[in-house]
Image 1 (cartoon, chains in turn purple, orange):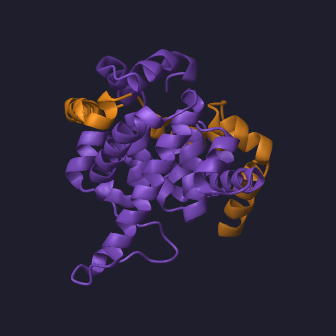
Image 2 (cartoon, chains in turn red, blue; image 1 turned 60 degrees about the horizontal axis):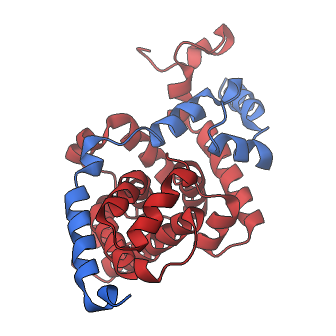
Length: 202
Length: 75
């Protein structure tokens, strides 16, 4: 993840209409954006990311602020688009698997092709994070992957900073206790007393 | 035995408070009971795969089109 300081010049160049500046911004922020959207809308992430960048391109001339504000602005657009997408999927009765349960945020496991493309470890991590309660999954993704500050995250999610910190903390606790995560952490380090907890074959 | 496992992990993970959470999401090293969590966060933050950057030409083309619109030219 690039520092916001490194993106200041490309941001101002992009606002002024410079294609190279925009390309630098896109390369720096798109990976985190697409991963956030994979947790939000699963396989629709590519489409939603495209819509997000289209809107960003259109509105960029009116954007005012620095790189930290831009990061929050971009992820707020993405979140609004993702919510629209989930509503749209929820309105399609012919596709029952697209219905979004109230206690999830619309995650569908990535197909084999996308896992192979994306990198198995990253796909695994996103799958596990997506299994968290929605507010915790979003807080973890925006804080840990998108690199947003507590204040920026609160702005994107429309919540108080304290609520963001609590959601992040609870999400991390839940992830740390997840058997899939524990199994990944157990390889080669756990003391003998818990050696039997290692998955078979590890 | 399940109860002991649950207790052991609860003890190992209970100290993830707000400050610890801030530290971890900022890239801080995980504690001894959080190695799996560290692996997960590292994986979620792994450098981008080539496929994740494949749409760059299309994105730049969209930017170019947006710039050619009258509203953009007028600024």
